[in-house]
View 1: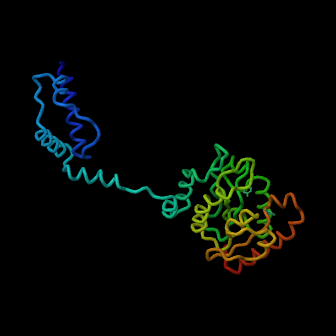
View 2: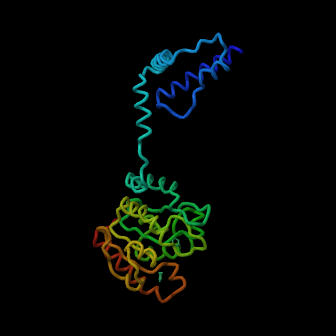
View 3: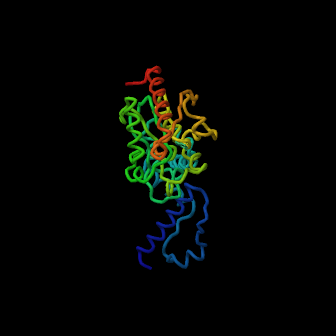
Length: 279
Ligand code: URA
Ligand code: URA
């Protein structure tokens, strides 16, 4: 048998023993003595178990200057490290950038429409007013930004009427991915997205929240109610004040809701100034 083959066999045996030394006994079957003699030539001295172990320990010490014990500890620490839950990962985020990176990886935020982009949120990360819509539509999905389509343009106009520029405020949605055919977000989808949105609200830390549309209002207030019942007043929400008004897309179809929306946002601006919102 060629010398290199013998080398390979003894190196393999050494490696397996080394593994066994570090990880304990495992399922790799060692060849029986008779099998070994079939494959290893008669002249090759097979080291005794004890010798082999000595050699391995020496080798590890020489190669890496750490003892077998230390190697063991290192591997064990890695093995027992528990996987963090989604809630723990969210809790660990201390910036919007970190939360966005987490959202990029979150399968639970996706709808059954494939290949959508994350629409995380946009605007002033320290805004005192946060606007929360329902879910991204076609244009929002394409651009990865909330409220950029027709409804978004109307939202910008409404905000301008109460002296806010888009850059002054922070805008997000209940869902961070577009649902197929722009259908209503499912209860499960809202529930999956909510922990991320709550963290986003905590990080932006606005004085006021404006929910546009029924989906947004009922999801954050955690109760089913009509838009008519929810609008026009300030609700307490996790130590902040929250108002619900009509969705700009609804205003595009129903002119009669423009007046009450106008009244709501006037009230919102007044409260914003009372609370010392900047600018
Ligand atoms: N409608 C929403 O609710 N959100 C958007 O981002 C766009 C349209
Ligand atoms: N119903 C809704 O769901 N949203 C509106 O904005 C108005 C009515």
